Length: 377
Image 1 (tube, rainbow, N blue to C red):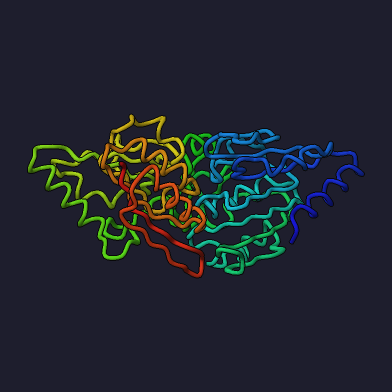
Image 2 (image 1 turned 45 degrees about the horizontal axis):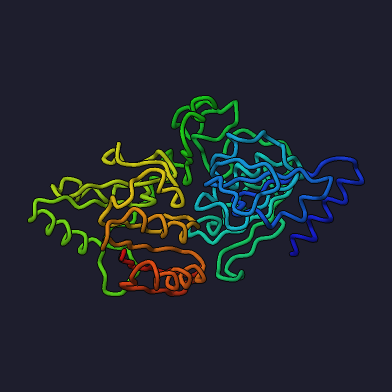
């Protein structure tokens, strides 16, 4: 499918009808890809970003929010077309629900992602519940460059009460009914007061609560066990009666840190895109993207910065931020499921700014994974 031609066709139809074509781009990036199309008189363009940075000037109206929080920024049934090119950042399931809610009846969405989740591989897009809300026009998985999937859907009609893929405690639909004998879901007002609490599996537990790879597996570097490395550094610091400052970027639920929180040498801080973290980390987690770490932490603050799939498309700016926060000789251990070109750029930039201690990359059916261990000069 040629999206540019599809968009022009839609714009011509809108012009003939004397109306505006309302388009939303989720995760717009720099936004300059819209420079030419934005000149069309029939286009009303909106975009979202996790950072709000307009590197080249997005020609539309921008809102800072995640894919799971679109309903907080836009009205139901407002858009004719919603597009996202790898901009859902791990919130694919709630993102699709939000997208369907935002579309007008008959509106279309064209979405791609290379993020590692069970959706939509679990076939929930073809469920009876999903069919009530939208028709799958096209779905491709593992056939795109660098892996990932493409989903094109068309909304059937007005959104019905209840979530598409399971009960959601944040879904902004009034008139919730008792489901599954588990009690009433939160009201719209109460639900909106929470941040991105999305029930991925329909069991009343927020999806974020499942994201917590063990520290042992925090890196894809050969012959490197991050948990063992960290314990050695902690013991060395304890022997000197010093503290070891560690930052985990994109901590997930955070339960993986429970076994080390009582270590006398550990000073742990973390970031997340959600307020939903393990109780043991309360007060240690700040809401921040990898591109905005410098706003939340002082330079030369940490001995170790680690991120396991937690930079969400902001790997290069995340590396720059991490180097800003690290003490001299401090180390960044980063694992990402991002395009290999970012991996290569990170290694190229290392020549002037930091030392590459180790690196590794490999291919999977869903796309590439790579790890780097970098030391600040």
